[in-house]
Length: 132
Image 1: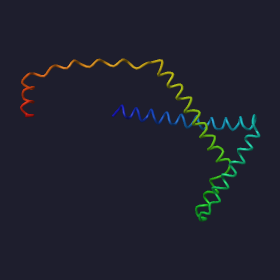
Image 2: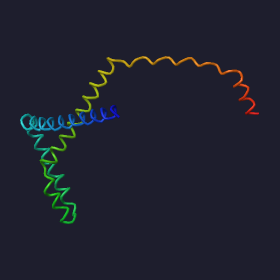
Image 3: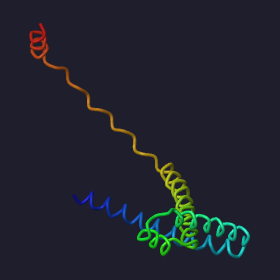
């Protein structure tokens, strides 16, 4: 039970760290785009506006479409897109780091299997009688 709890805690901690890093990295990417590549950011904002127009213009009943118009805007769409990109970058970097650490510490060699003892002759005779 303790090992399972430790695994669950470790997984949830890793997931929380990954989500936090993706959140921070997405805002860093947004800042870099704003100052270094403003034309690309403007293009991405236009793309997000088109996605917003598509999502809110689906012809859903007003009770659902109102929520879409409240919660879906171009800034949110852009940040979600940048967060997905950040998660992909973190996954690639994490995989590279974990595989390089794993290759530095090769797994221990498997233990040789214990020698099997020969079955007594009486067991061999019994199995022959059972067959035929």
